[in-house]
Length: 492
Image 1 (tube, rainbow, N blue to C red):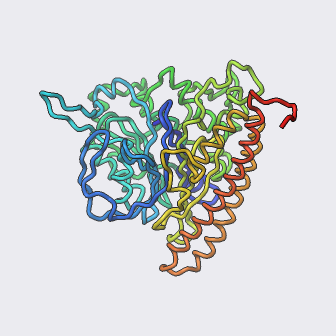
Image 2: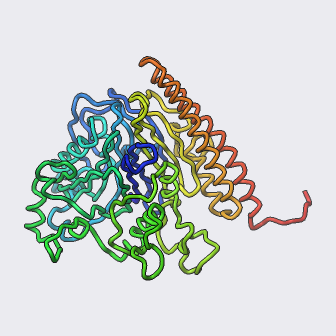
Image 3: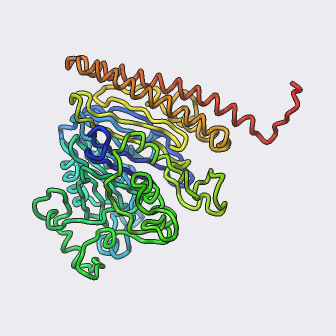
């Protein structure tokens, strides 16, 4: 799936939290309803079978409870997407990434082969559908997430190129698959942020560390031999740039991928040269860094703003009333019509472990939605977040958000101020409610934690439901006034 990921190290965030965030996007022409749920240990299968690839995996006997955001409709598998387990370890999977023919020829993807009259079916490898379910319930640190995911890739393989993040209160690790069975992973520097727009992104890697101490790098045990034996390193001076070795630099990247990294870097490091034909980094630059030190500390609002981007403030904004019209919409936006949801996990070091993690969620097109935080050490999720069905309705957050986006898009000039007020109102109440319930949870004993956390989540859900309905009413009014069959004479 097409997605955009941002990772924020603890010394780069405004409050010392580690933050991982990702837009989960459907493929072109499709929209995937999502819901927010809790998976209990007894609900985790003993033997997992992928719907798409028919790959079977035996699972350990000791799964932890975890939250996730699976598909609301059955048919293509779980696609659990992102979540937090009982030990406040988080995961987001996956960011679809790119590779090149040399890599995929040397280690082909493990594709499912259907049965024929003369041959039994051949199961494929693992994919985005599977990863969270197979990893998150069993890991006790971000590093363990890399280790378990790497072992699964080496044993079962994958049928697609993917990147994924693992997070605890101290560390964030980013893993990228390489061909069918190989991988590399890198610890996000504490003082930096990472920008990932559907490309293989890591641009520096210490192979000695990865094959030795593994302090900040981990990879397949035979990765060095794999590179050497298949003549993959393109460096003229013996250097090692994984993006050059394993990634792509297609013409389509300069429309679909690199412009998104350009906008993110431009926002967090505005004093660098980003604009004009002589800029250090342009929308079509292949050398935009994988990670950078931001010029100021990054807030959750910053992450939401960037993941909602449609190139506002640039000539490429499809809603812009300025600049050359032929450049508007020239590049693929981050906030697009087929965002299914945005998941952001904030793990806070300054509160008790019982309520340390916040899972922020937004549904529908990020350019027009709002995000809300939920405590994760819970047994149930609010009805407004978990009752998504295939039919459009205002009874849940997913479909209500889709309604607002579809209406506001066609009446952008009239509605954008309503969306801004919606965001400001919800976000200020988010902070107030979290502050309130953090205080209560700090005083609670262990028996009360889950009950109070669920009460807090319900209060947040009630608040956003009220604000969402109010905004929908106003957006519908403005969009109705712009209908082409309108007429000014009052002849009711």
